Amino acid sequence: MLEALICPRTQTTLIYDAENQELVSKAAGLAYPIRNGIPVMLVDEARVLD
Image (cartoon, rainbow, N blue to C red; front, top):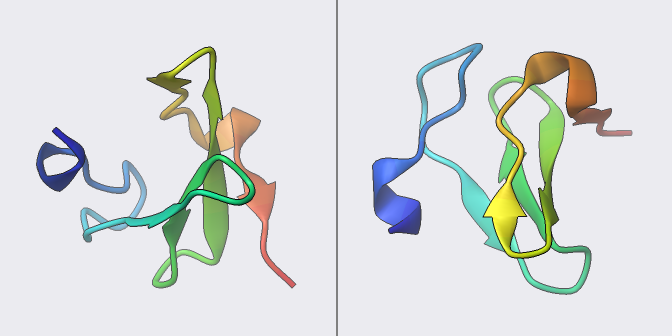
């Protein structure tokens, strides 16, 4: 299922970070949280990567 998800900002693929329970978009510099097993694909909810 993760292969079907793309970054809403850049339309690029995401990388699953199991340790932090996030989907990472390197192109956008954002990490989208996974809460209770559900990816939250909202830019406003994403964490900005350092």
